[in-house]
Image (tube, rainbow, N blue to C red; front, side, top):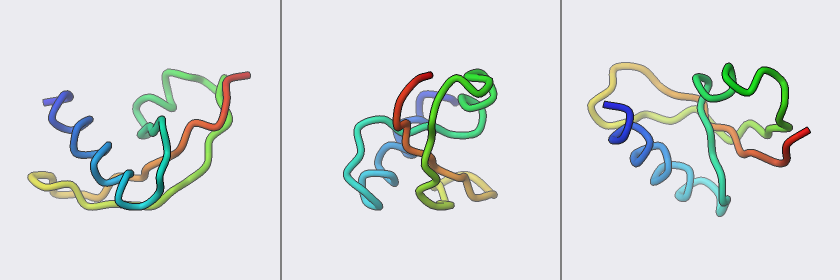
Length: 61
């Protein structure tokens, strides 16, 4: 469920860095190059079989 995934990604990102806005590849695809991002890390999410890359949103173009 997307809401649970978003909550878990947020919790993981705040453990890694103190950032306000994080995003994952699905959101990046929707932005279609309209944002400047910084890779944070790949993280394991409870209940998921694969790791997820996390990105910090720096600004919008």
